[in-house]
Amino acid sequence: MSEPWTYIALVYVAGVVWGLFVIDAHPGVRIGLAVLWPLGPIAFVVTLTVLLAASLIAFPIFGATVLALGILAFWMLQS
Image (cartoon, rainbow, N blue to C red; front, top):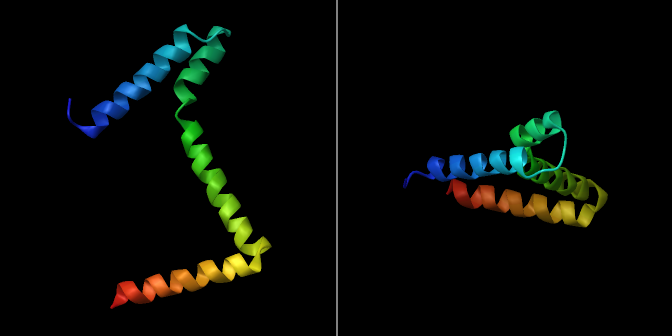
């Protein structure tokens, strides 16, 4: 039980069981929710990535700072 994938599988199975037996919805909705519930954190990460990319364009000073830090980090990692 020390493998990281075992813990991930246990959390997934717990979410499936919760979605199937605790949620008050029609059976089709329960099954869909139980199968798709891990997409929530993925959607959160995608949303933050899109917002960060948009802020680089919307706020040029922030974008220039991020670009300069990225170039500096790249340059420092190359040496």
